[in-house]
Image (cartoon, rainbow, N blue to C red):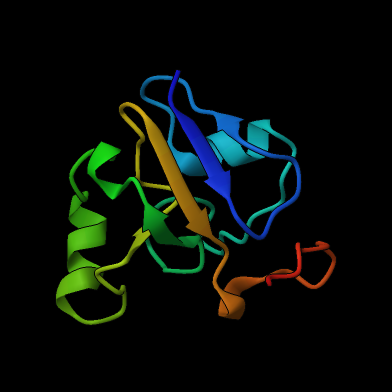
Length: 109
């Protein structure tokens, strides 16, 4: 089963089911993750910074391409509500700008 590790979230790797978005996998694992538009790909608040394993993701969706083309989404980021992990492992990080105030993040060394 594919796994997602978010470096600055506690708890270790998260199992991602086939066809499941990263956002759904994060919520199923009990993590709160910003998603202002309700996970519909209409904003960029659910973005995840990619560290490694991006080749294991499905190609960017139309929503993601729109934000990539306008510069609102970095080439090293994906929308967690849109991105699907197809195989292997993915490592990412919660961007500083979208950290939630009530979530305790892991300090980085």
